[in-house]
Amino acid sequence: MKDSLRTALALVTLVGFLTLGLGAVAQTEAEATVEVEIGFGLGIDRETRGLEGSAVEFAADTPQVFCLTRIRGLAAPAQVTHAWYHEGRTMARVDLNVGSGDWRTWSSKKLLPSWTGHWEVKVLDANGTVLASAGFDVK
Image 1 (cartoon, rainbow, N blue to C red):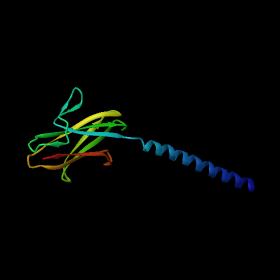
Image 2 (image 1 turned 135 degrees about the vertical axis):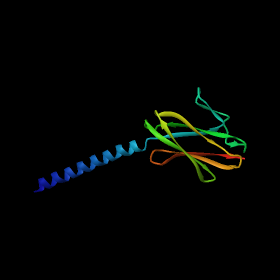
Image 3 (image 1 turned 60 degrees about the horizontal axis):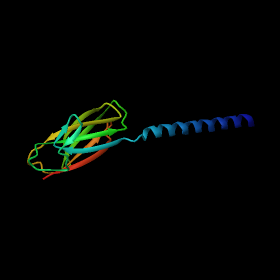
Image 4 (image 1 turned 180 degrees about the vertical axis):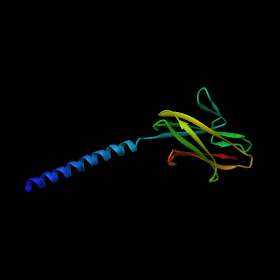
């Protein structure tokens, strides 16, 4: 009886260690770092995939603002969303494809002269989790 009890305890202990080990692996994979850089400008240079007229403040007569996002560490293929907010109100949502672990993508928003104030773009993953956010002002 003592031997069967020891065997059962050893088996429970082994299963516990294996479960903890698998949990640690899953946690490490889930904590993979996703880095997101966000910039704003007046246009996109398609050859360099960089911003033209980079700024965080724009004049009220600016017709359009571009948001360039560089995403590193997101398993591809994937999709992100640029959610554009003006003074906390959702103005647009743009779904964008991510094709590799180091990817640049962009969206833009046409502006009306009366849309002065603070703007923010949140980069969301496919589950709606905010990966990063940044803002600019229109004066």
